[in-house]
Amino acid sequence: MYIKNKLPNNSGMLFTYNTPKLLSFWMKNTFIDLDIIFLDEYMNIVGYKENNIPHSLKQIKIITPSKYVLEMNSGTVKKFNLKK
Image (tube, rainbow, N blue to C red; front, side, top):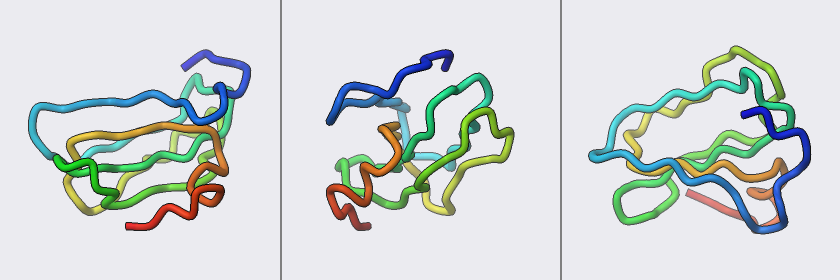
C-alpha cells in the first residue's frame, strides 16, 4: 500500500499464513496495478487475479484455500506464462 512506483522487475511482496485458508484482498491505498498470485503450502499456484485496479474496494479472492499470496507488478502472470 501507498507505493506509487512500479515494483522492481521480478520482485513482489509475499504474504504468509500459518495454515491454508480462503483469503481476500483489495486495492485500497494501492497506487499501482498488481497481479495477485495465490499459492498452496507447497508453493504451487492455485489461482491468480491479473491486472487489479488501483484503489478498488472490490474483493480479490479465489475459491481455493491458500497459504501464501504473492503480489507482483501487473503483467507478471502473462510475462512468465504462469498457470495453475
